[in-house]
Structures are given as C-alpha cells and as structure tokens.
Length: 406
Image (tube, helix red, strand yellow):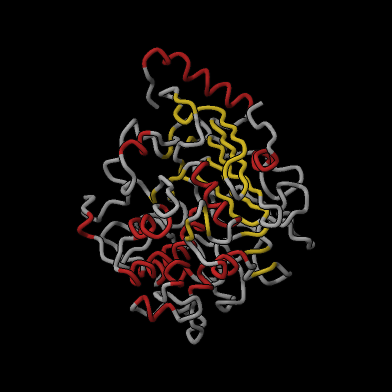
C-alpha cells in the first residue's frame, strides 16, 4: 500500500475503522427511472491512499455485470445478421466446439449467453496470455460438465463469455474492447472500457481501487494514470498488441468481468432495459432484442441446474440464481429452493449481480414500474450473509437503499 503526503497517519486508521465496523471501503448507489437519475448516494473512498472520495462518476471493475453489457453488444451483431442465436457456433468460430461426452449436440450462442452450454470454470477462463488461444481452454476436459447435455442444464460459468467475445471478434474482425466501444458504450455516451486500454488517461486516473480483507489494493491501484499493460502479458512477457488476432483469444479484455464503468454509467445500462433498447433518444437495441435478453431461458426446477455460482470469488448462497435469460437474471422467483430477492418485496426485477476482488455490485430494474437501482461496494470480500435472501447483507442494504457504512 502507498501513503500520500499528510495522510500517512490517517490511512491505517481508516482501514482499522473499516475492519472494526465490517463495512465497505466505498459504496455508491444510484436510483433512476426511464428519464434519468433520481437520487445518488456515495460514501467512503475510491482510493484510500490518495484520500480520494468515491463518486457516482468513478469507474470501477464492475465484475459480472460485464456479462450483461457484453450480451448487449452480441445482440447488436445478431440484429445486423452477423451472429445467430441458434446457429452452431462452430461455423463462426472456424473450429469445432463440442462437448466431448455429447459430440453430436451443437452449441449455440443462446446456450453460451444463458450458461447452458455444458461448460464449467474448472479449466480456467482468464489466464490466457496475450499471444495464446482460448481454444486451448475448451480442449481441456475439465472445462466440461461430464453429466449434462448442452442446452439441458444451467451452471453459471465465466468461461462462456470469452467464447462469446471470440465469436464477436470473428464476426467483425474487430478487437473486442473496441467493438464494444463502437456498438454500446459510445452510442450511450458512457465513459467506460473493458480493461483499461480503450479508456483515456483521465478516466483511468479516477479508478476505484479494489481492496482485500487486509486493506491491500488488489485491482486498479492506477496511481493517477492508465496502467502500462491492462491485459495478460504474452508468453514472452511483453504487452505488444500486434500479437492480437481476431477471434483467437476472446478472454483478453475480460468480457466476463473486466468492464470499468461508473455507477452513473451503469444506470444508463439499466435505463436501456427500462426503455426497451432506447436511452435519451438513442436506440441501441430493438424492442425484440431486449425481450430476448430479459426473457428467462432457464427457470429453476429440481435437477435442471445449480442455483449458486461455483467460482471462488462468489459470495452468493444457494437459491441465488433461479431465472436467467441472455446474461440477464430475474429476481424473486416464487419457487421452493429460491432465495433470489435482495429487495424483499417479491417484485420480479431484471438485471445482473457482480462479485470479485472484494467488490459487490448490482443493477436491477422494475420494468413495470419504470424504476431501477445501480450500486457497488468495495472492500467487502467477506460480507455477512443476508437475512432474507441468498445475497449478502451488503447487497440487501444497497438494493433497499439502507445505510451500509454504519
């Protein structure tokens, strides 16, 4: 950890207070409706060492909400006829993607987006070097659930989304992060990026630092500038983007979790869902595409899926996932075994949650009421369990607009 100027004595005290109260280092919550932001609450420090307070405009690694934004980009390409939700993805990939135990079952983009492709995270998904090939991950037998035919079983797995990004690159010839700028982020006027390369220096300087349980920075301690290398280095330990080839390594820009976006930017993503694909007069998706995203492709029933994320970064409990569309979760499923209602009011909101590197996040919208909330908290790698749901207590408080720093 670094210390800045006269704050040298204050920094350990701040962390000691954080540990004593088991509250977030920072928490930001933005409530919105179809027309814009209606309220904002920001507490704590985006960067403790610099004594920089958190704001709703500071970009944070938002974790798995990145999947929802990636899916919006994928649906743009579906609308353009460059991708097909139900075609065998092997056609687009240029190589055969098959479950080794079920080689006659084609795998589709719809299966990947809804975590029903038969894949698991057991072989990894993010550590592919800059000059590596993501195909090597899916060639590993550990990447596959040996018991279930693709399309028949829900198992939340990050590995699906580097494959989605690979398909997007193959369909366009564009680098994933730049493609997402063109199709989603710039049209919505959101100052955000997947990993840091396509953000400017000023945006990177406002990064929210992520902390572990000891108060050590674990991600995005940018120290006022953009990182020299924002992706996994090559096998030669360089960061030369000339290694990049379209559709070779869709993990490079972390489509599953690496989006850096502010709470205000995240609110615009929520407003896109509220506005049936249109925000502030700009149409990014058709109404039909939004319906495809939010309509559950899977609803929990005994024996048809796993209701909790199995990745070590997850803080969820069983009953967390019970309805899932195309990278869109539906809350408050009225079914035995489901505890997916952090709001505690039984309303069927749609959106996505995130958890990684001590951060918890969420964006949820009530499409009938036309309202929503976007939030994140940092420095809570061991948040206490929620009282009323499979979410943590921190997420329940942020969802409901209750104080989390007391």
